[in-house]
Length: 431
Image (cartoon, rainbow, N blue to C red; front, top):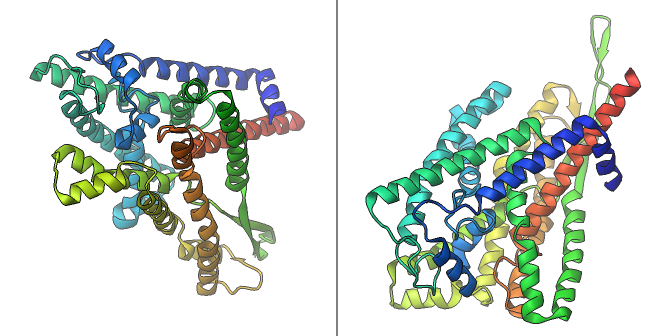
């Protein structure tokens, strides 16, 4: 992999793409620290230096690279786009029109992308409005800090802040698409990677300052093992062999080739962890907004606010397993795969085409999803163990959503660079 990166820098075209991607990443990080007009930057920094953030805002803050709690221009980060993409993807199963667009190829995909952009802007307006409504009351956004984050709460100032944050989300979408078109890798994934990786040095250094060199060395050793395990599982897949019968069209013969259907162990990616985290924080969010002191609110505060509670851990793991099966079921359709194979004369050796193939694929998928869901649940609870051992925050660097995204995006980007290098090698050979 290192040799591939070295060769990429020696290739002028790829070198330009890599430097372009790095410049967009730097611009994205710059926008993440520029405060929105009307925000008291000094008060925000003072609050962040004295109070640890967690909960739902801590999760969104992770995806924004710390920009959310600073109420910067890019405060919403990439979360509105992620949410809208997931919603559109789920709606393709429910709405026939969306499913038709998905099957139309490039033109249909472009239309769905346009719908995703519109929904992203709508969600950005809603999320920025909700964020500012919470932040204008001291102690609501950053619990335990009573300093005024937004000193001027007039309607003109609030509307200006909503407009600026929504525009920031639009710029982030544009930057991501620029990386996809003119850079290396998937633009949105690269920006998520940038946001999460930006917090790693400060989190590791805080562990060293608070717990000492031994704890820091132990965390680094655990981090290497976790990354190695995640890389191993993310690349693991079950390859189902597929053969295509020969067909004669005139004097030309088609087919007669062998290929395979790759089914990854972690077919769902990081989506189940995001779903479970968001859903699990809703009860504590309701208690926080209502300020209720009833029995149910006290029970939720006792069991779902602190991550080291056994009920919290079991619920979190159960939700991840459930959403893993749910997401795999709506994104991989065995009936559709079996029909496409039958249409083009493909078959699995020893399995009849049609319904038996679909049942076999469903059997394999359900069996391979079981270890994948357990793997996601195990990786997701690593920060909870760190919370108990080191008193770290929920955004512990070597576990959960952060490590899954960082490793996944890193592997995909490296594969794209290697594939582009191979393409250029073949072009040189043909010439």
